[in-house]
Image (cartoon, rainbow, N blue to C red):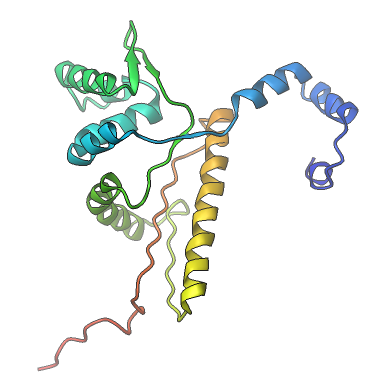
Length: 212
């Protein structure tokens, strides 16, 4: 399979044979491909402004969106019914969801959330979330927690290229993750990545304590 697609030599007949081997019709395959169109969405000004000053509502929405329903809040015994309804009603009024019967929720946007890094919401949330994130990463000791750091010296043009490369990489794997979760949600586990760039050399900018 890898060789066929790497060489871009998958004819319609070959694709049909592959589908027959894994017991799926080519029509089903095309329907799946249609549903897996990678898209992104952004918040309008009103929503972003509200979330930036009400981070608890933003956290609720993100968790609601990831778990595709309110069941997670009840199973974790995290919120009472009144609080859940209050969150849902406000988020519905913002135009992000539609509340349905039987604790079901319909989302009014498709794809993954694209939040500008320079937005007030992004900055406010990052200030609160990033320190906790790094604390978990550094203190854990298993293969799902990874971190690395490095410092060097770069000309301004190379610094901009580094930032551009990281942006492209983040977009690439965000889209791959969107498809992974559509195809195999149980097999795709949560992954968080935070990268910081600043004018600091590791060790060289640290204050050295005085020895008495």
